[in-house]
Image (cartoon, rainbow over all chains, first blue to last red; front, side, top):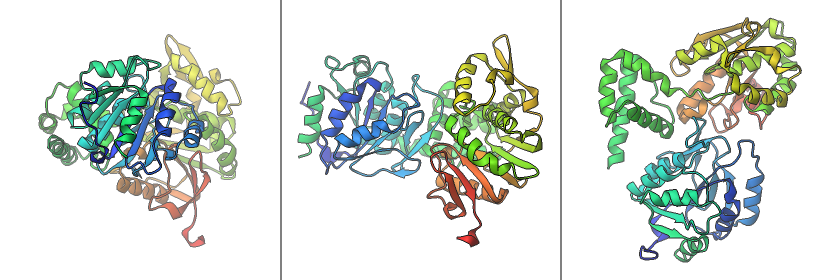
Length: 196
Length: 277
């Protein structure tokens, strides 16, 4: 099935990524590969401990050519920015492409929850959204990926064989709504080569 | 297309709730609201939002059952300990200079933070000259707040929070354990008035020295945020303090110039007289 579906980045506006705490390395490799003139916005839920401070932002910012920041209430989403959900807050996308936070109950034992970001982003961006699930140890993101697909977006899961924690990508794949199953390097190639 | 119809259904639902019962959720941040409505549909076994709207219109008891699902009651004692530490260190010394103190805790939900505040005031020796107005529109949550009975298993986290917040005594002195519950000491609620108040539709009820409203504004859209901030502005004495949630700010609101930040990180602001700018 791989590579039969062509991914043309020009057709998209936003990428959402779900990854759990252990995915720091995978995620930073992916984010660092994005060139400074990358045309899409990137919004990320990483499951971090609620007391995590801004150190992870510094860590990513050091490695990336794109601007990495924590999402703020009512912030307008800009192309080429990378936004992280703040620890202990859910992050949602409004239809007018602004970001909002919520401290609702945990979903899938998680706050921020991947599902909450993905579902709201799917509503806002419809077929202009790419959803990516990387390494992780629970099934947060399944419902989100299903809805991204349902609204016409594009879905990618990291190949569980190479993922540090295969549960999350495997669980997303098992929903039957994943367009491409790729290794990290293949994801990077897709995103960058297709764009160039 | 389906989403557009869904948005129309949400509009109709919100309009119905407002016109029929006076609860106005029309200016809540849409994405969180949508999620909550969808959850309600699922929980109550509906296929469409419109089916629920119809039942809401004709069945008051059903409405009363679901309305409280629109308020978020996620909270904890000494939530964001650094906020309480800075409140203690930066604001309390100022409050101490008043002969009496009025504090409004708006959107207090189940009251965990009201008891946290009461403990802090006790330890700083100003509880006896303070009146705390603790308000919420959620009657169920308010009843829990009034009773001050919480789950014993949460007390471990709260104790840690209390210590990080600069607590001066032993947290266990403030509650007694019974079966699986922690019952907060009566002395903490003596000067607290719990009252039903809706920030969206009700007006102010007194001059306050400090207003706490944490993690409430994030559920409102910009317009409603501005309206509620004006309400707080009107309600504060000159140089009164406003404390918001850790991800909320007065920055970029229409009230930006009416307040100055005292603690940017912990979102504590002070009302300044506009003429002084």
